Image 1 (tube, chains in turn cyan, purple):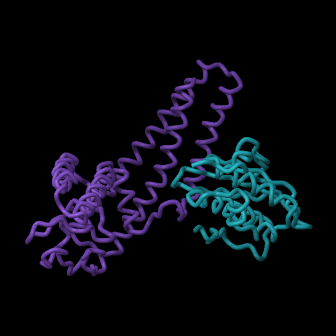
Image 2 (cartoon, helix red, strand yellow; image 1 turned 120 degrees about the vertical axis):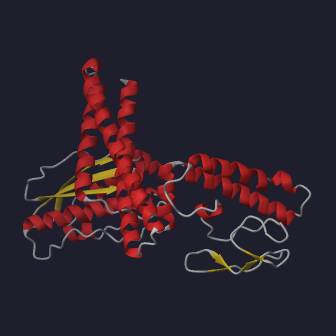
Image 3 (cartoon, one colour; image 1 turned 60 degrees about the horizontal axis):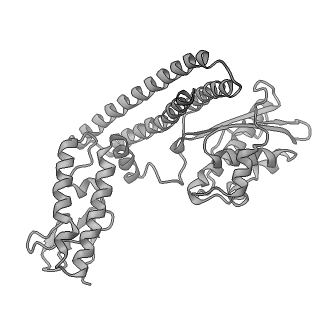
Length: 142
Length: 235
């Protein structure tokens, strides 16, 4: 199966690879995995507590090209968005942007989960009243 | 084409199927006991049933192989050159199913995966699995350590010095893989015992869930083993 040009582009030039200080109260960390293909994805975001804008995003993913491209795209998309806007990103948006084939849809689900997990971690750190326990996305995966 | 309607009970086994040729009742067999004609493959037949087996995980591979050869010979399209197109098609269907069934059941891991697939705990491609956070942490760290070795090598690090940590990582991952496989065998035995004693559904579900979790862990570790082996081959 051939990867789309966009997947290859992100794979060859992944954006925002790296990590942020896990202990920083303004940094939320999400660690998620898709064991069926052995993928593990870490996504971190630094959020300005006053504006609730995501100022920085980093990821590190061990997995296939689609998983790397999905997380790379996710970090690109969340930067500059508010927490609420970032939470509105759906895996289907990623599927569309990267033209992921059906067998790789779970990679996009993973990226959406990672965003949600990271922001839920951030909210927890902020003692945010609306913080909810990390809730895996029940995103449509078909 | 006179394929009779198949009704099935809750377990998905066909019930009340009739032979397309002589209308005699046929159970889940390849040939009609009355007229000897090859039978259509009922929808949803599982690979275990195809071999006339219970869905047990400990399987005598020599026996399975013998049964495979016997069935290949019986179902082979060469035996149907003078038969009707319909029967030839049935022979082709059953022969190809036989190959898939054999390939799947002969490997212990794919056997477990197949059982979990049939029981709805895994779905191909789409459904994501829940992974305990501790496992993710561990896998991420192991991957990072492998990545560090990779980077050191890419930056022209001393290969002789790198072999040592790579060898250590290899031994570590391989050891974990063996642990996981042993665990899978243990749960498999519990599963077989649960079938033998007709244990309740809750107990069976719990065993399936455990197998699924171990299998997830196994996918991660297998990837790590493959990764470190690749580095060692290139080092």
